[in-house]
Image (cartoon, rainbow, N blue to C red; front, side, top):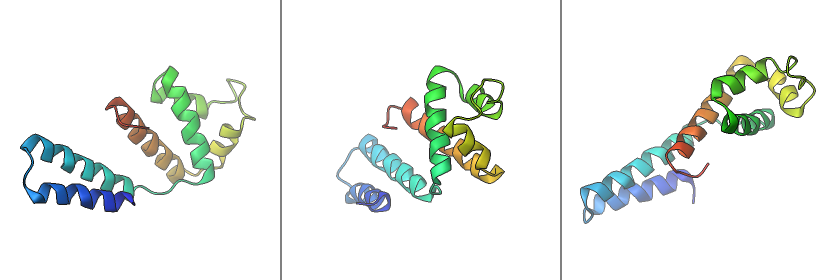
Amino acid sequence: MSDLQAAIKEIERVLIGNKSREVEKVYLSNAIRLIQECCQPELTKSQQIVLERLKVKIRDSDLCSAIHQLENSDIWGESEEPYDIAYSSLNEDERLEVVQAVCDWKRRVSHGRNG
């Protein structure tokens, strides 16, 4: 089942009308999240490499520090690592898509959803 189909199912559960208001809120929140995930761009292989590296790095520090480390990898002696090579190949828009993806991931993890 696609995310969009799952979102439709969540909305249909609310429309049945036999659930409490709190349960309806959960269903609608799930539907909104699933629809938002459908709207996110697919990441390229290079973007995925960078995203996975950022996920690792922000477990030990914050997002800004992790991005700073990528931007200055030559200072840290990491300029030949696969994630740095991938990061260097991205244009500004692709980098912003990665930042958006890692922010979305961090938000899901912070709210107890799988990441």
